[in-house]
Amino acid sequence: MKIVKLPKEKLAEFLSCLRAFGEIHAPTKRGEKSHVFAPLKEPAGIELDYTRTILPLKKYFLPPMETMFNFQAEKGYETPAEESDKKYIIFGVHPCDIHSLKILDLVFGGKYVDGHYFSRRSKAAIIGLDCIPDEFCFCRSTGTDFVDDGFDLFLSDIEDSYLVRVGTSLGDDMVKAADTLFQEVTVQDREKYKKKSIQRGQSFQSEIQLQDLPEIMDLEYESQIWQELGEECLGCGTCSMVCPTCYCYAVFDELNLDAASGQRIRRWDSCLFKDYALVAGGHNFRAQRSSRVKNRYFHKQRGFVSQYGRPSCVGCGRCKEYCPAGVDIIEVVNKLRSETRV
Ligand code: SF4
Ligand code: SF4
Image (cartoon, rainbow, N blue to C red):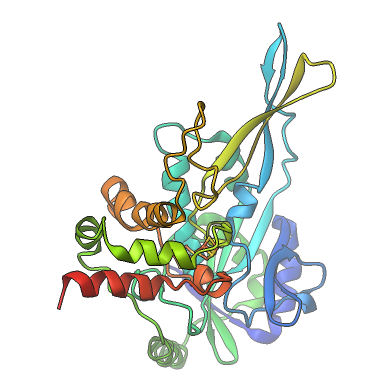
């Protein structure tokens, strides 16, 4: 893989060059402590010293609400006019969030390919950035603390510069378009990179043991732990909304006043919501909060492993940080494990 070096004082200039490749979206501050991915107006507005954004990247590719198609009686249906072909660049994406996109690609590129999702995906370049974990991060345990692919460029902080890994030909074009800003990587740079990697590895404060977890989940299907968790959980759905790998959506029709035409819409949904498993006739397959919260854990740590060979959690820590009831995925897994293993 081609690796070059970008001195930090050249970053603003590089961002200006990148505008030729699309609209730049980057982490920016929201309130005192929070960050969001948003369009970058000025290079000075970028906040690269962040740990996680409130909403992950799925908001770009699976918007919270969208029209899937318009319909009209006797004429059938048509997909909405093509969205603009505008390209954009999402700058400063951490490894766990890049891994989450790889998971969403698997899901939306499966048996029924989701054209809406992939149309947006194809217009976005991803520029990654390394990070320092906080107390909520456990991506090291999920093997998502480092990425080898899934990005166009990836920047690693080595004090006064960034080491830039070039992941795609588009990334290479970006470097070539600003080649006077880049320098060759020296032996000293590699040493700095190794030192930073070791420091980063030592910064992890949380871990989760995933080994044997699918089997433990099966054994603990009837555990009292789910009842206890159902009493703690408020059923607010925040954990699903902020999770980069939760992708459930509800589909409904909105009828126009002529009662003959309308739109089919999809909107983010959560398996924690009370009516998520409500079906025609009024039966609710998961009326109890305990069964809904159990379902979320089983889907991520059991069902997804059966289907895709890996859990659908990237250890970003969002569900733990933003849960108003303090539900902690690491504690839940540890409790389940303690019932089965010594
Ligand atoms: S964020 Fe917490 S309280 Fe809300 S649904 Fe998820 S686990 Fe329950
Ligand atoms: S389950 Fe929690 S830690 Fe895992 S990817 Fe989702 S929000 Fe992040």
